[in-house]
Amino acid sequence: MTVKGVYILCIRLRKSRNIRVGRLGDIFFRKGTYLYAGSALGGIEARLKRHIGKDKKLHWHIDYLLDKAHVITAAILRAGDKRNECAAARKLSRVLTCVPGFGSGDCGCGGHLYYAGDALHGTGGFLREYGLQKWEYFNINRL
Ligand SMILES: [Zn+2]
Image 1 (cartoon, protein in one colour):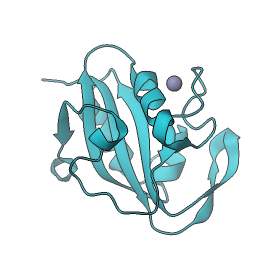
Image 2 (cartoon, rainbow, N blue to C red):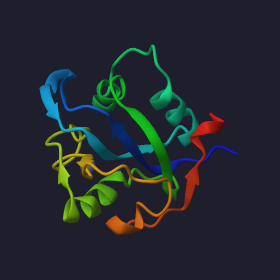
Image 3 (cartoon, helix red, strand yellow):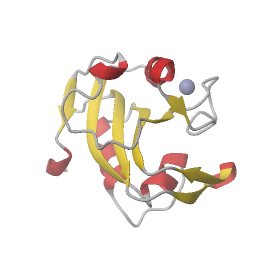
Image 4 (cartoon, protein in one colour):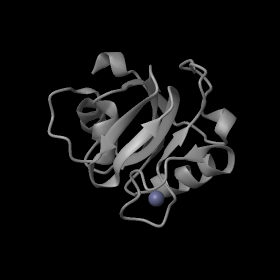
């Protein structure tokens, strides 16, 4: 069964650094944990494989970040056929600071990537802290 829907990536950047993010240009990223809201209507598993895989053509903003950082956890928020990642981004925006314009070229959001601080988040419970309800965690080690 192909699961489609909205997901959150929990991303770890080990060192503060500038990263060139496509047309957004050079952005300074503080080391720490980032949360990225996305949706995959063609199947979340295939999309996560792409996110985690190296040696790909850098196309989306998230590709540029993941070229230098890595995914710790992926959670599926909502299974379904809608691109609801903007609703998830809005919830994150109430408590976290977004990277302006990141991943939100096609919508009115401030951004789809949020800085969650320097602390390394574990794999459990990180979403509830930010007002999001997970549907299930995706075992990225299985990909
Ligand atoms: Zn949006």
